[in-house]
Image (cartoon, rainbow, N blue to C red; front, side, top):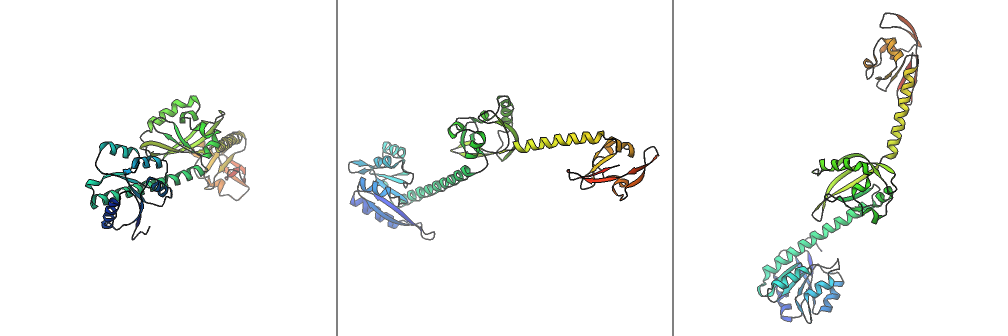
Length: 353
């Protein structure tokens, strides 16, 4: 369809020659910049065949089609997701027919007795605009589904009120060890140990009105086999079908937390060793700020540890290129000090004296 002069492919399903001529005449007078290319179907079977080709942008169907009705045609094609929107025509207005038409999926309802070019144009324009909008939304949903399913990050969607999980991707299934149907039977509280649920419910209540992306932090979850897994959670609010839902992204940080814990334990042990050695020892970082000062060094300098940590290293120690210096302690006594420096795995400089 050309953007400058769009052509609308219209299927007219009408068995009365007079009404066929009437609609052809009305369509030829419609303005609005769109040109209607009309295909005619005069029987129920012809209409079924034409609709099955998926070649039309919109259709107009008469209520009476020989032994069948337009509502029969609507019901027969209702399961076809590619069926164009259909406008139902009838000779006289009837609330019963109107309700039946809308229930069967008619996009609009027009009465022949009161039909003119203006009414027909408004109906066609409205139905086409709504259908195009719906198609764009469906395309966005399909694109979202593709990205959602293919994402290497574990993702799921849950209902904000019931907490029931509505959708999940393959990465989340692999992380938690569930099958898809099993996961979709869960609530988000089922991903946590029973002891952790009360704190989680309180957290949800505190952040229920948060609509922006929420960095929810690190939480302990449990897999299907009850083994723990620590995940960093980011969630955002989405709206599908008029309901508030939450999209959750979970990053497995279990390995990272274990490595950090091991490193912290190693550093704690190393600091204990450094504090127990009899030689004065100082650790500085790349900016020459003191990170560790053991008790022996504090005695030599006559300063408490609190006055050394986080401050520039004493010039007498850091600026000297000599292997030994004389250092006066806080009581005025002068000491001969041997200096040794080395790089450590902390990416900091150790100096012993």
